[in-house]
Length: 321
Image 1 (cartoon, rainbow, N blue to C red):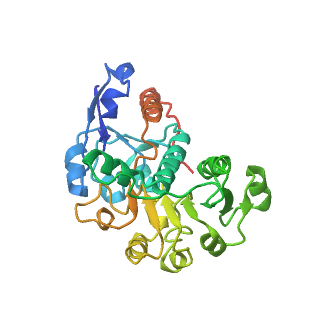
Image 2 (image 1 turned 180 degrees about the horizontal axis):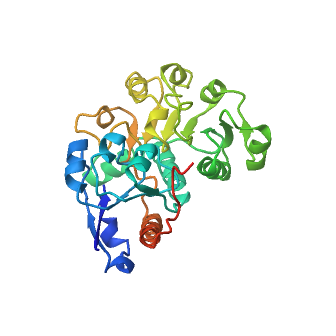
Image 3 (image 1 turned 90 degrees about the horizontal axis):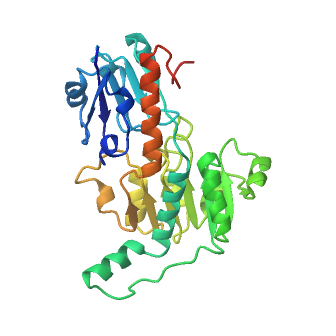
């Protein structure tokens, strides 16, 4: 039997340019879909005849209403080690194995700092003006050294972001509900006594929490009001951790100086999405984990998952407990 494998939301064509599916050549036919399916009906219509699906991160949700309409599906590979938009119980009920892949932590750390530096030195404004013949040096940036960096979540990614902040000579504080003084000291940063304190004292607040019911809308209208008018917010984690409507309102009203987002409540962004017109917003199209090396790592892991599944010994099974 030859299996059919769909690679979803492959916007840059990574499956064909960076992935090596040759070990599966005589057993699996791979089809890359470079566009996002906006509705469940579109998604089901496109992949109904596939036994294997590879989905990047959490770009595509697989609730029961989708899985129950994919009777041929046997293996769902989600890049990364966790996925919150797959209904694992529905997958088990349908006999669908769900597997993860390796994924590097460095790319989102690097993008976080690209965004912070972009905000600090107004890079988009200045680079655009230079290319278009606009004014020469129309803005004045701000220094990182001596500023306070607030890290919301000191896990694998937040820890690396904090260490770069220290290297820039910033004062670094961190907070999460589970963060201890001992853990903060290990990283060399201060533990903020509360979220409110972190918000009120940070020149740059950067979000690195996992999304769960305890962190959903953690930074809302009340929390944003605690931030300084000169402060900036950066979110490369999950969109739902920050109330985007409240954030855009804060930007329009000048209650914070600026923000940078790599994650959004709807992706890809509709043409009329408020992120496209919010003042002081530096926005990127969810590039956090999108690097050549990391995509190769993820796709190699997907190939390994498929080989192991076909051999009857699935690897990196998710949602098993």
